[in-house]
Length: 77
Picture 1 (cartoon, rainbow, N blue to C red):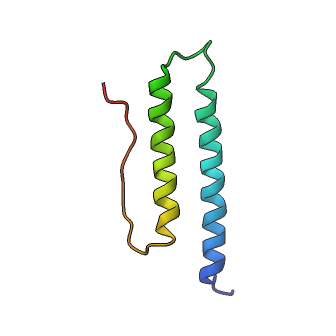
Picture 2 (cartoon, rainbow, N blue to C red):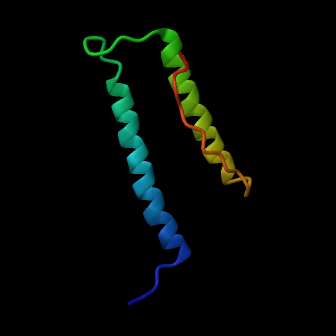
Picture 3 (spheres, one colour):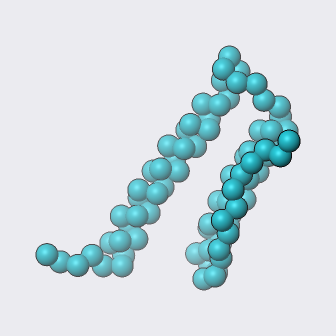
C-alpha cells in the first residue's frame, strides 16, 4: 500500500471541503424563498457579508502562513 503524498491529501480534502461549501451555499440560497421565510435586506447583507469575509480570510491564508480565525456567524438581536 502506497502512502498518500501531501499533494494527494490536499486535493482529496480540498475537493471534499469545496463540495461541502458549495452544497451549504445552495442551502443558504434556498432561504430566499419568501413563501417559507421572512427576512430583511439588512439581514441578507449581514449574512453575505459574513460569508464573503470568511472567504477572503480563507483565501488570504494561502498567502499568509499564519491566519487562524474561528469566528461564527450569528444575527445579533
